Length: 226
Ligand SMILES: C[S@@+](CC[C@H](N)C(=O)[O-])C[C@H]1O[C@@H](n2cnc3c(N)ncnc32)[C@H](O)[C@@H]1O
Image 1: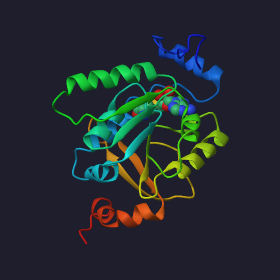
Image 2 (image 1 turned 90 degrees about the horizontal axis):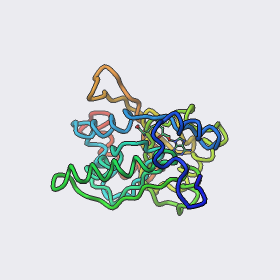
Image 3 (image 1 turned 90 degrees about the vertical axis):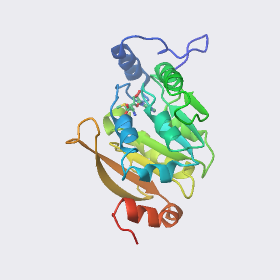
Image 4 (image 1 turned 135 degrees about the vertical axis):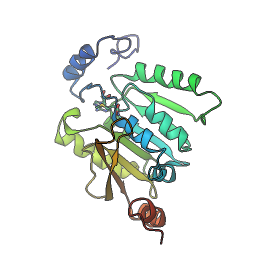
């Protein structure tokens, strides 16, 4: 992944097709440019139902797997009051960094600034280095065609289960990552930019997460006040 000078080999590469070819050779996933998936979740966070995201993200260590080129994961974490944010992005980390910096300069004084880091590793390598019971995890647009295969996906799902904080959630939006041993609820939300398009959001968690958030989930997901 890194050259002799310790620089990521995709840093500064202009054409996304070159990044895609590079990722094909590497075999740890595909540098498919996204754009809309994390953005859709961020925009939904401003709607009455999207308040749910504030509840589950506030105060957490948020990690986005496959954050892409844009800063919407950081913006979501910051608007929801996360403790900090890590963007895991092996192929567009250089662009992700610039995007967060430009978001910070444009939103100076408007939005809450939180500590952040951009990590150039692939998601499996990154999660393997994290402790048990620690994170709130986000994945948007990570469909099966992005990852190298079912074995890799299964390992990532096991790592999500291990590293997820006991009372926190894994938010999987428009994504095929689905750790089987965690409970989950599912809902569909409309995209602000094209309301006829819906994204599927799953919230996966251990029993503690569902018990702790039972009231709020009843209100936001099932529309019940009591
Ligand atoms: C469809 S894009 C989604 C990007 C972003 N979440 C969005 O909605 O704009 C998938 C992203 O996953 C990244 N990716 C591919 N394989 C990966 C892996 N093994 N670990 C982490 N990210 C990976 C790609 O480089 C790409 O940025």
